[in-house]
Length: 255
Image (cartoon, rainbow, N blue to C red; front, side, top):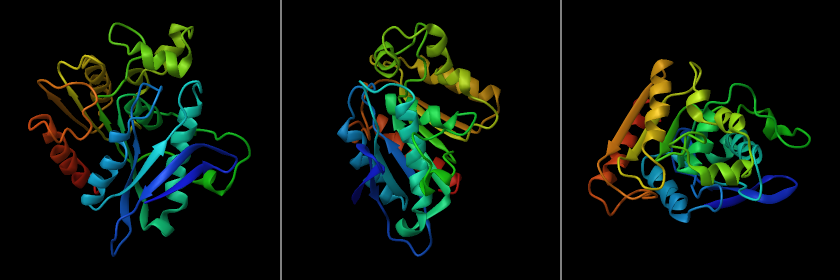
């Protein structure tokens, strides 16, 4: 693995490459760890990248900017990460036509923001060669994601860290994923646990309903029980099933 600064002028965001050995260019997935836009959970980074490697998928873990940084800086980092992977595809043995995103909790919200962005995500500062690449992911995997920043199911901590405690409800609604989903949204895989006490399962249900209305290819799994933040859930024989289901989803989409 190798870590790289994401932006030429700051070290606050980095991307770590976990390439795979392959005779042909491999598909790739950019991983966004969760942490409520307050911290980044290590167990949702490198271990997930290594699991993706076991599937023959190149992985790239993004350490995006978190509080006190505010929106749109994490989204700019996410867009830059996908652009970076595509720009450096040849040197990392990656197929630039097959770059997806995978996020956990608030990282799932960030992956969902990028996947539902209607227009180009503009970078900070002057353009460089990396910024000429397409930032749109070909698919998205959202694990116990924050999708709602307003309403009864909202994860207020993520909203406050991303937008500030005094952000108007209209802005929170604008960045809630169910409001952003559309026909151009790429295929998605969602999973959650029904009794998640950290981020209510309604977050996944709301987004799934919106995606279905727009006929976006979709797979959803809700497991009966499990704490928030399970990651790969290797110690849970029931929830740990999600990795097999996701692997089949990825294969079915050509990843």
